[in-house]
Image (cartoon, rainbow, N blue to C red; front, side, top):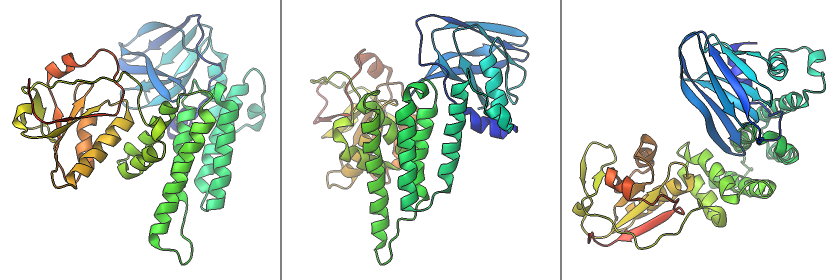
Length: 383
């Protein structure tokens, strides 16, 4: 099996276990080279880091973790490989970031990699105790089959397959990246279809496409509601379009599913903004103080892990640019200002958007999470 095809398969993996267990397991990572790695785990639509560090040559790192399921071993160069973590001690051996790791003490991982690399039908039909590895092959085939659709009828049938597969197997998929991958591909399928009807105007194609996407979000809200909070589902769907700078469609999703379009937290009133807060222009090259912005302005709170807040802020800046007043929109990031925040400016062709870039702001924000999106219109800086 080629490295490229293995990388593809590494994203199409399933967990053997039904989630995190209270017992701790020992994972040992041995490396013959010096390399930076990260071990990521999954829970529904969320990805989190289990371990991240530099391992020196001819050394080992022991990790105690309660995570059970599919983890992804990621190298600094972007290479990634699936790792199944169970209850038994596991040793992962690394020799080259461009080569799959080998294992000790894990028949599941050995079989898993053989299954990914083999076209042997007898091996693929092997049953217990590797049922979930076979489920992975079903998911891999389902994703591959979605590449060939072209008609609205084929789209409807394939979407139903995706609904049934995740709906029937979610408990086995939630501690892998498969739920994320399948939903992402589900929405990508909409772009394979020709929505044109003879005699219909060109705008009809766009409207049909948008309607399919919005309805698709509604489907996932319904299918996954027994397992996930609605705002988690919606934020993930929104991120699939926001991350591709498709803000108009992301905004349409929010508008049609407004009740789920938020990130949970405290509702806080009575915000005060110091006039000496440093504010940077969109290119990050020039700074001035908040007090230099005379007259009314909009303070937009955003979090880089809340796509809805970022979409709504870009939409607010676009709308403001189209109005006579053209109020400046000043982004108040709840994390340290980053390139992810600054990228919002690239999605606005006109308008005034700026970013608070001041350590005093970070210290002033509450320790508890704030419910987003949140906009505060400030008439003047009084303190």
